[in-house]
Image (cartoon, rainbow, N blue to C red; front, top):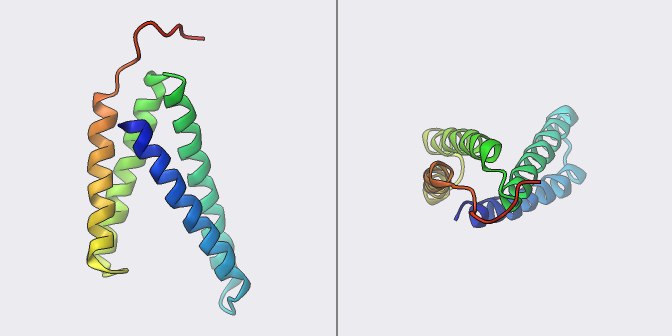
Amino acid sequence: MLTVLLVLEGVLLAWVALIAILASFGSHGVQMQVVSLLIMAFAVLGWIVATLIGALRSRVSWVRGSALTIHVLLFAAGTGCLQLAIGPWWFGFGIVAAALLGFAAAILARPRTGVPAA
């Protein structure tokens, strides 16, 4: 379940990064805000991809901690969306639900038996 959720989050974050890149071309605002948004989007995307690769390789010892951290931060982002009314209400609730599901999946993650650690 954690692997599926990380794949979904990675795809959605890649979509956000693509939208941020496209928006940066038409932006006439402060360019440093656009640059910082792009840097953060790609940094988090790299973090999720690294965690996903670790999950696929059954490296549960550090993947669990990384996934817990990702989902605690995702919960904060979701509650921030709800409190600040950023986007529609269902978007904030979706982020909070994904964070809670990911948090539970990270807690329940166990190494696969019979798979040698390399």
